Length: 220
Ligand SMILES: Cc1cc2nc3c(=O)[nH]c(=O)nc-3n(C[C@H](O)[C@H](O)[C@H](O)COP(=O)(O)O)c2cc1C
Image 1 (cartoon, rainbow, N blue to C red):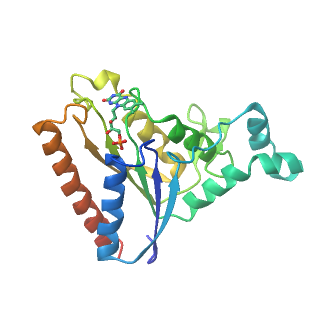
Image 2: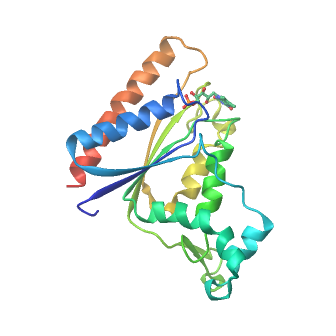
């Protein structure tokens, strides 16, 4: 970890107000900053969704950099900028609500633009059955999520419906994050607005403060 802490915050809630994942991302960065100076980059894909990849995008991404046309370079500019933000970060905070049992489309679009051969992963069939390897290293990921229903954790009654947490963990390597460096904090019961929700929310707030202090301390 570098002595300067660069935090990239990616929020994907479509709600500008009343968003719990946004509230937790603010709490994380404020708690971290209270303990240690840091540079914070905000990438709000919920308010400004990234482009979807296209056939032209894929052709440009898989063409070698020396052979790319001016148009192909231009097609990749948005992806270049988003990847640059990831490269410059030490900690990536993802505000990731559950939408239809998965991640918001805006966040998936962000991941699709981040996953770039030669920049965030390498592909080599000589590695056998696991040809993909990450390029980036040593970053930490903070997942801050909220969901309306409950019991999505392994062993829970809705675990089989959880298309969000496994997908986020699977994509972590594109960000240069090892599985043991993924920290996940979840609020459940949001649709019920009952005591179970209030308890879940309060617990998540405490966990978020604690994680921020711990990461700020560990980063010094
Ligand atoms: C479009 C949409 C789809 C949703 N789909 C689910 C879902 O599949 N499962 C669930 O438990 N909650 C679902 N919810 C509830 C959200 O996960 C919940 O409201 C959460 O707090 C949203 O995050 P935010 O507060 O940061 O905006 C959905 C909400 C919206 C707006």
